[in-house]
Length: 521
Image (spheres, rainbow, N blue to C red):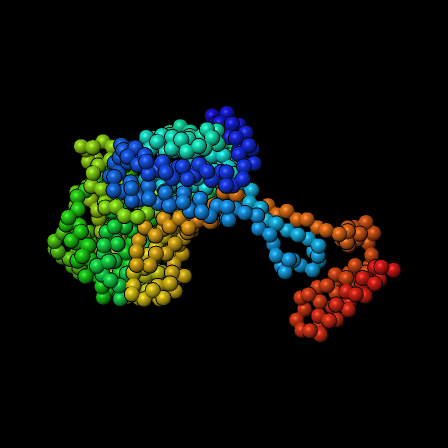
């Protein structure tokens, strides 16, 4: 099954809907934003039932950023998607008489394969962008968040989006590959890099473009002049938000050596108060345990509540709890404390993981290279920032990064040397959900962006419409009746418009005039 019936209905709906002005397409968006407010309790209950997220996290990292994303679309879509007239001053001389306009045309039918870790925010934004840009959408929600998908889809329908324009496919594991085989025009996928690579290969064979929001292994850099308290709190927040099930969670913390002892001492206080958390899938717990064991086998030491040995009080004493597989994930917008409450299957702890910092992790350790979907991170001291950057670059992922320092100007210069889709200075995670900025990764973290003007434009393809006035078409004449004078005209035009020096340009202009005269005889 490749959803042929759904696709046919979507194409018919899209053909009708695209004729509507953008302002008309925006009408349901304002209603949808209002429904996010009025039906917040339904969404909170669904997200808790699906993946165990507490209300404070659903509101802070799902509803607030979703509403902000919709408001941005309401405010900016008309401007961003408007036809763009190319200024005449940019027109080459040999195209005199031409008038060019760049239009943004929808792809047609967009397939959206959604994720579960932020099942509202990471689905609402891309779907709304695609619909407002004039596409129809076939949406395959995650099998881990079916209740949230049902409520979200009902909100879109209640807001006034046509039934065939947005169709929710079965929230099953099988429906994703089936959608990838369907004859859609564009695909938006949020998920793991492993699945993303397979999807990219299949789409590439059929030349179907895509946006791939994949895994991360994000680095934090704490410089010598940083606010240690703020940096430590940010590291803890970046580790534990959504129980570590976030693609831009903090995974590697590079701390300048002069701050290392104070930084790890503060982290120890947080670890002392933490309880194991339950993860959504057993594979995540298995992978996390492997990453911890690998790092310890290479000499890393686990941070524990009381200082037992070594610099910064590290100890190799084991903390009970298993770990997690790498998975999907994305921006973790504003606020929200880590959730100690278990997800589905409350009362069991087979997927339990204690928030874990590994100290003095060697660069060859898997935690420094692999994506992870659990509250596990390495803390690594450094003496020179060049060394820290070189070690960080060994990971193939480039989703986001953060820098903590009192010198914002120096941090901005440092950001230019960090290969990631975003760099946050003196904060983590939350700013990446800014609705007016693009979000996307580099390297193994995928390609393309969502959010911001760039996200809207990604839901369209550019089409240039050129109107040429008059009847002067020397290139057409040359094709019918070749004339040696044409070479003088073209060579003269090249010299007159692009040669260096006034004298050479004047000689080119004279060559052009001679050629035109010869052609007129």
